[in-house]
Length: 346
Ligand code: SF4
Ligand code: SF4
Image (cartoon, rainbow, N blue to C red; front, top):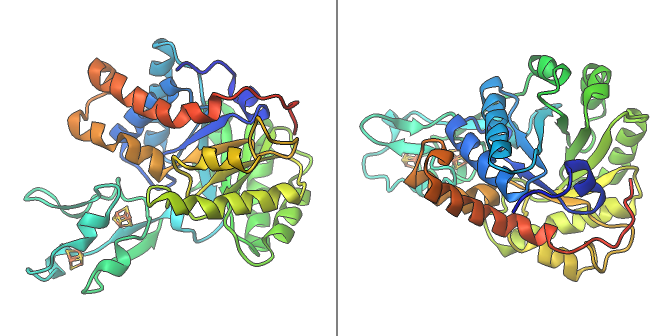
């Protein structure tokens, strides 16, 4: 399904679809193929780690998708203002594992990032995106995490060159000083951006914190998205994961902050139907509506089977590419399929 609206028009029409590759996910072959499939399926934005090789893979995939007739989603890079589960990786020493361990860590890992082959033992660093699901399952308590903060200075040349058109700042309630310090670095570059997103999970006095952020960052020369990160990195777990992000998105809408509200964290194949049933998306929505949805672990899970069938660039294996695009479109289409009677807002 080609992307018929530009990304910013999709944002204003409540049809914004963002693919989250993962702020710590660095498997460039998978980033390339997943980005290619979702770009051809009509995604408006591709969110990637602040890693030059990962950004390059996403850019090449978007260019390939354009050559094949797709639209041109924005490239977004995620950064953070402090410790955050999106910006970490797990590690353990496989030599310490008891020989009779049934390896629950390997079974739970949604990224196939834990290996016990003759060639690779332990965690595949590039694939681990820090979801944390393996941590409580290790009976020997061997698995730890370490921070992998994004360095904003590394991506400013790509922002200036227009390669990266959107930036997302991950923050948490009460991070006043940390956000302020990061904003001093980011603010001079906002004139180059098309979109700035602020991603925040729920927490004590979160709406007050978002109001403070809103006042700090205005005036802004680009579009602003508030990303309601309801239940981070959990959309692939099941139906119920999406409730928290919908409730949080409603709370942000009711706060009437300037900018768009977009869901993430727990989003999956049930999210759009629930939003429509609740009148938070067209056609039943009022002017106060969710502008779009970002999908991470669930979007990647939808295409996981194709990685096991082909790890080369999927445009070289047309049957795989067509099947992957169809699977991606099944997630993109529900958000795009209903005409928007609403006047653009924001
Ligand atoms: S389960 Fe999550 S944290 Fe653990 S290795 Fe896999 S991706 Fe990393
Ligand atoms: S669960 Fe713990 S002990 Fe068992 S294989 Fe995984 S890391 Fe090793």
